[in-house]
Image (cartoon, rainbow, N blue to C red; front, side, top):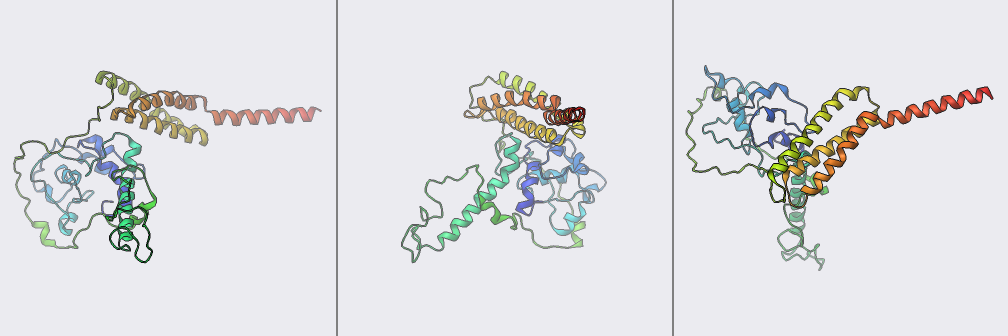
Length: 325
């Protein structure tokens, strides 16, 4: 899931958490199944295990390195011997408590987090296309043998008016579907199983080099009001989600699908509000306030089921009337 771009789309959501705790174990992408057997190792409260267990099993120590950027190591689910044997094992020698992605998508919005690597793939695909196009030019943006512009390029493979870091998705992402994002040297050495794990060392960094995302805080909202609103609306979203899980099996498919879509939109809106971006915070607050009544209305009234029942009753009434006539 780490080595291929297409697999990393879903798994990157799990790695986007900047806190390493049990909640991170539950943090899963939409297209990635829950991996419950790895849940317990998501903790920073457990140091190295004794009795040589670190040489055999995947442990919190080993998995912390898996979550420290870039994180392309210690892939094991249960037995770390495979990583040690195949050369993908990296021991934790210094506790830095730095987790997340690189670069980190600075948002709490689950929709954006699920699409973050797809956006990155689009940007990389655009760069690949521009480099390929640049090779066909004479170096100043003019196509060789064509005498014209290659689309407004600046001679460096970047089109005019196109800024890097955009969060839109272009169709260029397909260029990386079958490409690897992490490469490892092919190794299979049994001697690595007995290679000693170095002792722990102190973290000598004078200051933390990475600040955790805690919202942009550029919106003109009081922190207390933000906390109150996020707590209240977030609680309603959570209760609604549990209710949807309990009732979905007895709901009409159309009602269940509509409930899921509206619930996801409400969740996205409240967490975009938590981002406290100046241009989106107020709009997200209004969206979440409007979507929640719609969600609970669908959950309780079940309009598709009601419409179907009404249609059946109307048909039955018409049949009785025709028979009597």
